[in-house]
Amino acid sequence: MKKLSARRRHPLAALVVLLFALAATGGLYAVFAPAEAAKADSSAQSLQIDEGKRLFAVGCSSCHGLNGEGSSTGPSLAGVGSAAVDFQVGTGRMPAQQPGAQVLKKPNIYSQDDIDAMAAFVASLGPGPVTPTKDQYTSTETDAISKGGELFRTNCSQCHNFAGAGGALTQGKFAPSLENVDAKHIYEAMQTGPQNMPSFPDTTMPEKQKQEIVAFVRYQANDAPNPGGLSLGSLGPVTEGLFGWIFGLGVLIAIAIWVAAHTTKAKKS
Amino acid sequence: MSHDMSDDKLPADTAEGHGEVAAADNPFADPGLPAHEVRRTDIDERAAKRAERHVSLLFIVSMLATVGFIASYVSIDPDKIVYIFPLGHISAMNFALGMTLGVALFCIGAGAVHWARTLMSDVEHPAERHPIEADDEVRADVIEQFKTGAGESGFGRRKMIRNTLIGSMALVPLSGVMLLRDLGPLPEKSLDSTAWSEATPAMPIQLINMNTNEPMKAEDIGIGSLTFAMPGPSALRPNGLQESDEDFQQQIAKDALMLIRIQPEDIKDAQSAALGFEGVLAYSKICTHVGCPISLYEQQTHHALCPCHQSTFDLSDGARVIFGPAGHPLPQLKISTDSLGYLVATGDFSHPVGPSFWERSE
Ligand code: FES
Image (tube, rainbow over all chains, first blue to last red; front, side, top):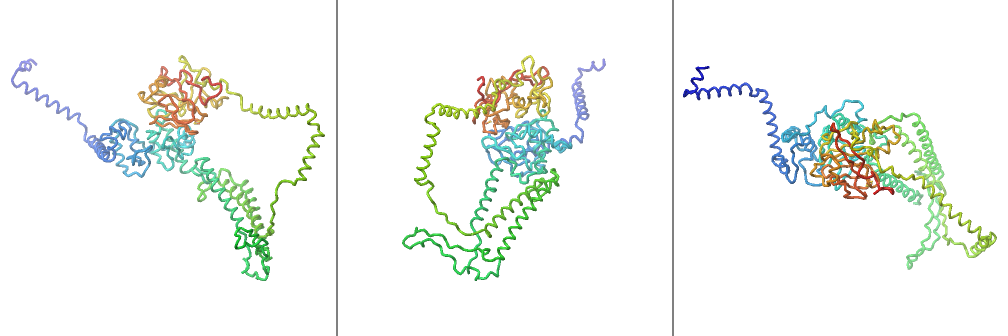
């Protein structure tokens, strides 16, 4: 040690220290640099995000801004999460066809891979609800439908009607019918609260309850029998009354006129 | 159809109509009745017999359908669901009952109509119109009789009888009015307070999530979310409200709560913001018009809509009425958090819940 400290003023000392420092950083890098596999993984993900960003620039940026920061025509997307993108694009609501009270559902033009890429890009802007997996929105419980029915009547039926047929809101807005809606999209709508729908986060409505609601809505749309035959849209007295007045009474009046109008007569010649 | 009906069975000449024929110079003359035409069944006994058989057949079908109705009522399992195109999955029993009863009634009607059209007498019976009033002689006689009767009863002479009679007749409708009392009793003070009124800052009542039956923390209520809550345990109800409680229906109607969260800077009414907790606001779910449950909450506009008569409340502005017939804003509950961070109410609603009533204090 004494020898070493004696030479610390040697002209080459600085060079030696520099060499040591370089060797140390190189060695540290070799030890801590990410492993080969991890490198490939992250580049795949960043590729997806890049791809998503490219699609976003084409389809979404005119309203939501190039980096999803929002503009006067579209809200900021930081923190909406991948579930919101999967719902909005998957149901064709985004990109929006035209501004108005409510953005309408229309055929979706993106492949699921494209949607996933855009969702990955938007998710990278800030943490938010994550696209659910199949086992998150599929319930295996046997009593899920009846429990879901109860939850549906507490939380959803006021807007979507007791049978999920949908209903009117204010100023041209409406709660859409839930018939033929994907289980995944129903789940995502509850998670994210699209447009004017309130959200039902896991903190107030746990995942299991959302599963039950999905089970009920799907049952209602697909398998629920209709004991009386025609449901007439399950809208209640309006359609039923209309049907009674127009078809019921109308047919009776037509028959009465027909009965009174002609009697078979025997004609000479 | 009968093809062997010979012409000679037809009357040689159809009877003449008996009205005047419209003259060329008077287009509005009474055209009279058209000539009577006979029906095939009037002149052809075989056609008549066939029509008779048709009518009875319809009645027999009706009988069979009624038997079918009774049979399906006793034999079909009420829970059985069948698939019938184009109706879909429907209750087998409903379908069978509706079909058989429909056929039974229809066949009676169809049989009766067919009978009337083919077999019942087809002769026109003109009926002249006459003035409805009686002739002068009859009228004079009736008036005379009335006068005699009035004189004999002494109605005009015996004032006491007349007046008491009028009095009793006038009072009788009051018994109908009395029955309206059954619409009561008046609510008096019962609408002034809810189960939340037991809450005090010292003894707050927890807000219980209606979905999970658990208390909630403020951070559980996300911005743009909607949650329904009921009162938790209190001094008077140590187990909270139970379905078996006698006043259960009344209480759930009065206590119902919707919880929303708005960015604090978006809340326009300072007083309303103060009643909430960090942007979490608790409003009554009962419309102040006639009391429908409302929770059609639009999270972007912060409007809550009543489905009954479209009253719209702005929840970011103290639930002010911005449209519709409701008379006053939705009552708001003062909330805060307890030492463990759970949301609690520290007092009753700001106003009585629901529609106005006579005794309402303000
Ligand atoms: S009850 Fe709500 S508007 Fe009439």
